[in-house]
Amino acid sequence: MPTQVNRYDIRIELHLHGRDGMVDSKSLLRILDVIEAAIYNSDRTDVDHAARELQLSPVIRDACLERLRQYRHQRLLLQEARPGSLELIGLVAGVSYFVLERTIGESVSEAYKESRYHARLKEFFRRLIDEKALILAEAIRRLLASRKKEANVRTLPRTENEPNTIVIQVPPESVQQGYGEQRTLGQSLD
Image (cartoon, rainbow, N blue to C red; front, top):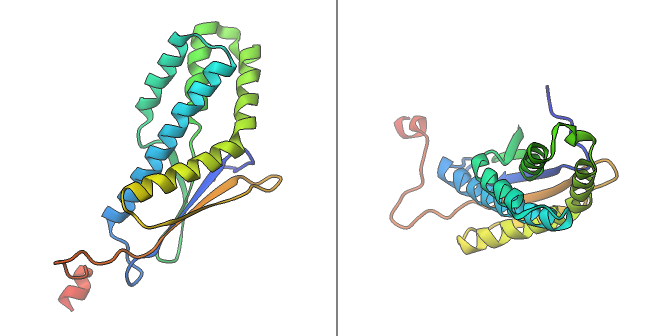
């Protein structure tokens, strides 16, 4: 069953324009790695800000930061693929919220779901979502530039019941010097 997207989600649309409609797996993996790194950095920032705002103990903050590392390559939930060169649509996973909720809940008590911490944590993340989308888009842009990867990264502001959307458009890569353009096995044997 498809996930119901709401206004507190952050959608990421990745548009890869390959040569002759083909995108090699290395290019896709490099872009996904950049997105993963940007979301991880954003999650760490979320934990730091939440710890300050909710006045969490340093032990809880450190436990949350450690737990974040356990979710490597689980921060972008791919939801859809569309025709074109290659278009993937995914949602940013709520890893930082989940880790904070779980860690605080374990340290406070069984009644955590009804506590003021739980309500404050939810409200904190609801207020944060628009800023998080902008910061995440900028982090993706910077990471792509630092890896000398050309891309156009832009954010689409959310409408009333729709999520923030980050659109990443990656043009075809130029052929590396000394390598011919890769073709499919069928093209090579034809």
